[in-house]
Length: 336
Ligand code: AHG
Ligand code: MN
Ligand code: MN
Figure (spheres, rainbow, N blue to C red):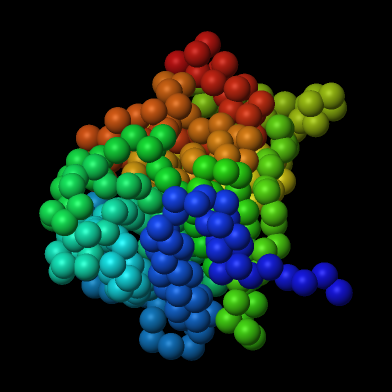
């Protein structure tokens, strides 16, 4: 029988390839793995316990927080603070970045930016949600409190990024800039096993994912591209299939495996786009590129090149199979 590789073994083997590695990133991943297990456990009994529904407060962006948003944020934050390798975090659920100011954490060399629960409006109806994380080396000196500059780095500086998808099974998918690997959680033993080695996204696909309710308010290039997706052409397998879950992690994960494009353009409701650059788009863009895909903003700029200006900055986001992103880019150039 084939022996299964656990996430812990895989990380350890990868670390062994880097003689200078200090083990700090390995420790950081153990924090994420632990918090993911705890959030998995809570989400799986969400219908039973009093943990669905609104928390009664709004977050930095004026969005209503769900109880599980707050729960997931607390669990990831405390797991990340526990090992002395992270000097601060930024989160969708925190107005400001959080400094970890005790001595052992101030010497930590990493910052983590996260969307602790992505797609949280799906929780109450038992639909897949996720956690997204993005990891950078700090730019401020070790031993000092973390600063805004540590968080406002372009996505191309990420040292690692990934997501946890709490779906029909729970998976952790991550990259350290050397390809993308996916691990499926076996809750009976409490272990993530390598199940999707070196994920490569198909060059093209037949799925397009967008909240089409906003159609009237999309830029002309996106409207025209949607029409293109809907036209018949057996050679290019059109009309394409429309799939939209409403949690970025789930929509992206499906398209990553099957081939497809995900779009959240500017709309008149969200003139900057809805998704957040630092903890939604950058980590997903890093994964997409590492799997052979592309991720751009509506003006065609590579997401990972954008110099962030604010923690909760939004950006129009187009990501997926490279030939499909090329195509929508042509439409955006032609029609604006
Ligand atoms: P979050 O739950 O972290 O606020 O993220 C929700 C995001 C994203 O996951 C999803 O793709 C998008 O919002 C859905 O927005 P619409 O409901 O406007 O389609
Ligand atoms: Mn989100
Ligand atoms: Mn969220």
